[in-house]
Image (cartoon, rainbow, N blue to C red; front, top):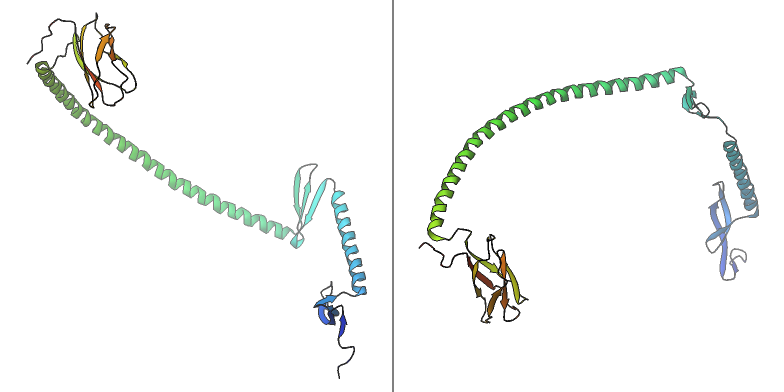
Length: 263
């Protein structure tokens, strides 16, 4: 037979014993409702008093901090205390003399070791800097010698270039008109216009006689006329707006009626 009080049904939930802990982390046996333990009245009362004590202690700690004036004293292990006086901006360390002395001596020894290592490193680096100065001096000497020798080569190159220019100038005399009174040049035209300003490579002293020829890159032909001839240039007029790229005007300008061009 099943005991009538072993299981109790309450609104579809079973009321059964559940093992749990209280707010002090002590093991307690609770009455379970839906696998959750229900706290007893004395627990709720106890935790209320516990929370009240915590709040009171916290308030006291805050009050003690708010009431601090002047100095702040910190007490650590081995009876060592640190006093910070905001009025004098002084920090006082007091307590076990042996501990404080050992701490200071140890720190002093570490600083001495660090200083010695740093000094040794600087000394070795100083030697490397001295060697670097020697290397730079040697490099400068080598660079000077190289520059001197290269200067001779440049002189030879200059002489060779001068000789080549002289020879080429003679060849140019045989094939091209090179006097400023007679100029032959080509001007590339940008599409989109029917009038172009043409400038001589070298200005004349007076307006020259000009012969101009239009070269096109397609089968479309344009009539070319010239006007406004001056000692600086002239205007080339086309019969229509230029639509094709690659068009050029070849110009022959001369101050003489019959320019002599060597064969």
